[in-house]
Amino acid sequence: MAYTQSANMSPVINAPDEARAAFIVKVYQHLALAVGAFVAFETLLFLSGIAEAMYEFFFVSGGNFAWLALMGGVMVGQWFAGQLVSKLDNPAAQYGGLFAIAGLQSLIFAPFLFLAFNSPTYGGGTVWTAAVITGVGFAGLSLIAFVTRRDLGFLRPIVMWGFMAALGLIIASAIFGFQLGIIFSVAMIGLSGAAILYQTQDIIRRYPEWAYVGAAVALFSSLMTMFWYVLRLVMQLTRR
Image 1 (cartoon, rainbow, N blue to C red):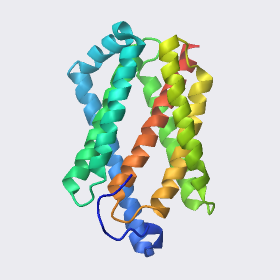
Image 2: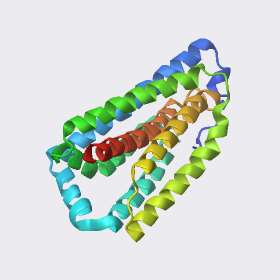
Image 3: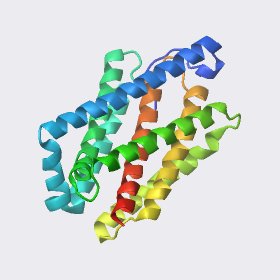
Image 4: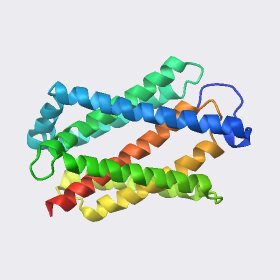
């Protein structure tokens, strides 16, 4: 993420202990804010009936190509929102970007969560199980990233190429109609975990202390990707 502020770019790892601690607190406060915004947006989509309409369109009548179009639109929207987050001389733009990304995530999750909550096969317990697993996994990975002395930068190319390969498989599955099964979900959970490990350490080693909103957004994206595939895996195992 490129920051549009000509300020001290020294990473927070070089700052005094008090400044590093304050930065970490702000990052996780803003991560919690993003998660709270996601829940609020998702609640609005459910109460307004939009989530149900999206489920009917994308999962019942729209088909795979409509779902790909939604995913593509969300990816483009997240890129523009990321540009807002990078404007560190404009706090309003940063928060606008954070809330925009939370809103876009709620759109992509809405039909999937509607299916999980309303299907007799799954039920709401499936969602809460996935949420707990994701939260515990995220906390454990964050702790590992903070306490290890090893530089986890080697994970970056693995994560980048892994997600590109996964995107190719998702597009191919939509075009040719084959299913991405349990092994794919497990692999994506592992890849998301690698991203969380790398990004958790990266925010300390590379981000300046005034970039906590951008750091929170980076972690939020990986957290939601892990939640998506944990929920997918739990649903797949429940269906068996």
